[in-house]
Amino acid sequence: MSQLSQLHESIIREIIEERNQEMAQRIAEKRKEAKIAEEQYQAEIKSIEAAGLNISNLNALDLELSAKAEEELQSIEAQMYSESQESIRIADDLDVEKTLLPQDAYVLTPIWVGAFSDDDVQDKLTAASLITTQTLLAGGGCKDFYNWAKGAGSGIAGTGVGKIQSWVYFGFWFKPPTSRFYTVRPFFRFRGYYIVRANDRWYNSKFARVTVSAWTNVKQYNWKGWNHVDVLNVGGDNININPRFDADRYTHNSFLLGGGDWAWISCVIGLYAYARGSGSYAKNDFSTGNANYLCVPHCYVY
Image 1 (tube, rainbow, N blue to C red):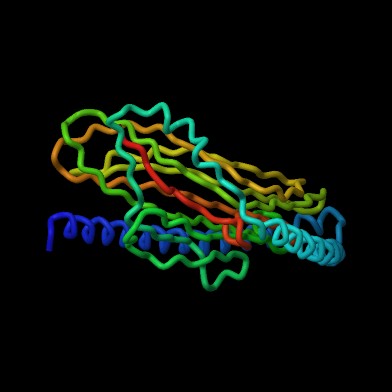
Image 2 (cartoon, rainbow, N blue to C red; image 1 turned 90 degrees about the horizontal axis):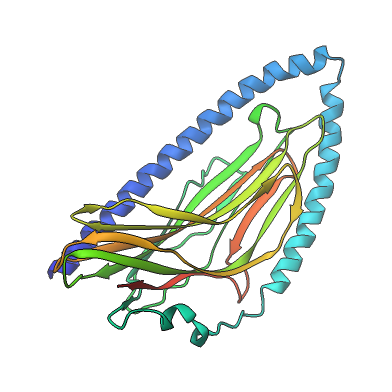
C-alpha cells in the first residue's frame, strides 16, 4: 500500500470517529436540555395559572394556529419544489478569481466526501438526508443534502425545540514543494433554498433560525485550526421567508506547511436549523429537484 493510501485511510478513519463521537455527544446534550426544559415548563405553568390564565385554552388556540401554519407550509414547499426543477446555469468561464491567481497556483479537486448529523432517531422534530461516505475517483463530488427542524407546543421555558447540526465534508490532498505559508482558497457553491417560519405571540415563545457556514482546516503533522465564516444566518421570532440561496463563496485561509510531505485539506459546509414552538419551522434545502446541491468543486492553493 502506498504512503498516500495509508495516509488517506488514517485521516478518513480519524474524521469519521471524531465526528461520530461529537454527534453522539450532541444528541445526548439535546435530550438532557429537553428534559430540563420540560421540568422548567411545569413550574411556568403554575405561574401562568396563578396569573388567572387558563393554560388549556391557550394550548387549544395554539393548536388551531399551528394547523393553519402547517397548511401554509405545505403550499410553500410545493412552490419551492417547483422552482427547484430548472437547473441554475453556471458560467464557469466568468470565474474572475481564477484569472487573478499566480501562475504557479495549484487547482485541487476533492478526493473524498462524507456527511454527519446530530439527527436523533428518537426526535421527531428533526431530519436530515444521508450521504454515503465515499472516495471519489475523479474531481467534482457535488451532493444533494437537506436538513430541517420544527417546533412543538408553546415553546415556553425552551420546550418544543427541534434543532439539528449537519456537516458535509469535502477532502483534498496537497503536497507542497517547499516549506512556507500557503494560501488556501476553497470555492464553496450553494444551490438551494431555505425556509424560516415563526409566529411568536404574547402567550408563547416561538423562534426559528437557519445558518449555513463554510469551514476550512489543514492537517500536516497536526491540525492547523479551523477557519470559518457564516455565509447565511437568518432567524427571528416573527418571520416567514422562503427565498432561494444560490451563491458562490471563496474563503481565504493561510497555513504554514512543510515541503515534500502530504497535507490534507478539509473543506466543510455546516447546515444548522432551529425551531421552537408549534408552527415554527427551519429548513436548509440543497437537495430538492434538479437545481439544488452543495459543492466544493475545487480549491486553489498558492
